[in-house]
Length: 366
Picture 1: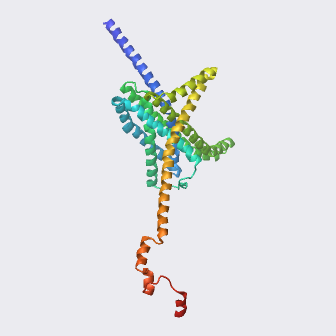
Picture 2 (picture 1 turned 120 degrees about the vertical axis):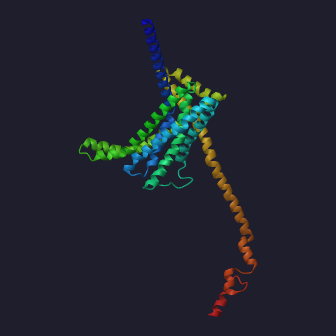
Picture 3 (picture 1 turned 180 degrees about the horizontal axis):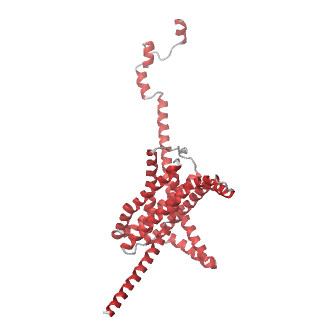
């Protein structure tokens, strides 16, 4: 009896250790998955505050709450089930889908650089007007949730790729953890950024000189923080997108680009001693970002240059057609009118085929 109880307790202890190990594995996998999605997370944090431009101060936090709920709904109800089914029944699609997301990230990063180098090329900048009313808020929140769906899809696919070899239940737990951690983290930071100027204004009204100085610093510094987030987000998108593409091409059989970056990383690592790990990682990051920039620039060229050229071609055809019209001297409407010998206005004035009024006739009438 006692021996059986001891054996049972031993089994329970073994199961507890196994469960603890599984929890550790899930935690480690979730950490890896979250770290891999860092580039998209930074971009998400930088993009979202733009959707809140024009909101009154009392509506900013409620709008962020609605966007947060919409983001969780995107991840948990739509993206997560689709990703799990895909990884279970068509895992071979993960690499192409991941590369598609990497191409999109590279395009987004390169396009931001293009827009900085070619400001207001296609259209005049639209200055957002002050929005008010429930309809305007609904429109802005819906736009933010749609953008979040794209970024959330990339985050979840990147996270899933890190745990693709794990059991289904572990994949599900990791993705749920990533969904909550990243969503709450991103929109918590967004809420802090959006309200930071209000916090600064509140501090400037305090009697304390230190608080007033901090408040002025917050108000003056937030535009710079947002600008810095934009730059960091651009670099992160090129880095993550380029690295995804390098690894994807290597997996599909094109080894040269990844091999070149990897050999450069190892060379720097072995040549720099104690700083080898950091500098090697930095070399890999720079190489990935350069590759992402090259791919992104190609996509930007297709998206911007080709439509621009087509517009010029259309303008050329329009000019040629106009030239034919002026060569014949009349438009089809004018030709049909002059064939009859008079315009309707002239007919009503003279009743004959005269096309001009002789000044002498006017003098004679007078």
